[in-house]
Length: 91
Image 1 (cartoon, one colour):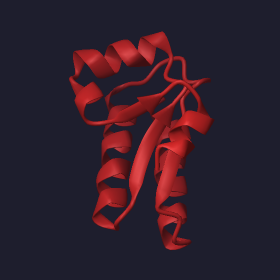
Image 2 (cartoon, rainbow, N blue to C red):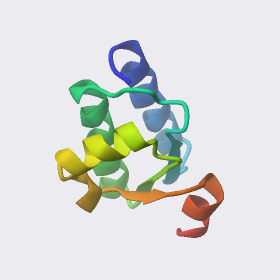
Image 3 (tube, rainbow, N blue to C red):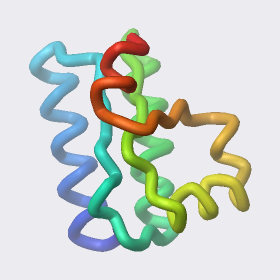
């Protein structure tokens, strides 16, 4: 996830906020890789949602992405769940 994918995610998060949807789950099941742009968008999204009284959770984090979150110590920042249902149920 980087480049155009990151831009799309950024736009979708802002659409959610504008619609008053402040509890967001991002399904990472099909994300095969993520660069610093993708990580930055996730952090920005989390910050933006929290500043607007919302929350962002991750679901279906792949092993590669989990490793990246661990290396960058972002596992302490994001709540990650095994499924979308588990993430939704955590709100």
